[in-house]
Length: 363
Image (cartoon, rainbow, N blue to C red; front, side, top):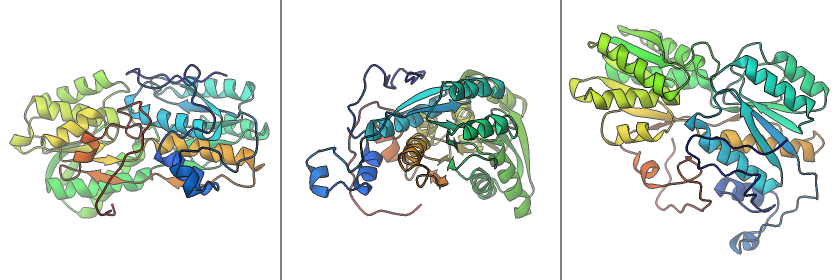
């Protein structure tokens, strides 16, 4: 297996060509983890990277993704690359470009046959991955899920609590709109990385008792078709009170549509998920009301860390469910996301420590 860090903006480092030296820190998350492994504050301050970790094989982990070139997963790949640099291992980024479970299963089978040391897979289908996961575990290959989950035999899930995130979206829709018709755009209905969010939004709206009707509209798995379908929907439903989305590409498509047709001035409310540049710009300029961050960087870093520790400890440690959180980003707090370029948000390939000052607020 070779490291592959495909992306559509050519910022991801090809870890096979530009390998960070074993032990080099790739970011603040890696730094904190190394501190937890016994590295002294003095050594950290001096920039030293030796740890208490024993010599170990250069483990090779495989990430199976459903939309391999989607810009949402740029920081996820940075997180995986940084964790591999910290722990002295390798990863491969593979799967499907257009949310096709059959292709994902084929690449997972290939990883099992090649003897991967661990697999992280986005479980976007309820049943497709059950058999290959069991086969991997039988072969002694640990499997964790990330970004999307099914309660099968995988060892742990690293990602947002998707239904609860959807309920938070629904409550926000109730606050923003009050009553009337709204639309919930979803790239691929039924897929388990995003459908639970829409289900949660519907549940929250129903529980509110408000006279709000949420229409579900599919947009497709690629950025261009998402924008086209969102704009087409608006042109056919000009009386819509709110436009919301449950995936990164659709959310950016909502932002573009809101801006192109100046819908905020017409009283249309808008929001969604994730931190793509067009979404953040839309919030800053007042075309979007909010977006929800789920920390995609952690969805790359933590799977590598867990699989590594599982291998290192002979299965005694490393595996844990991790909720990567939910944070509303609005015009009030979007500034740092726009002003800071980092691997954590996927808008810079440069490894650096990001300094901050002032009080820390929760949420």
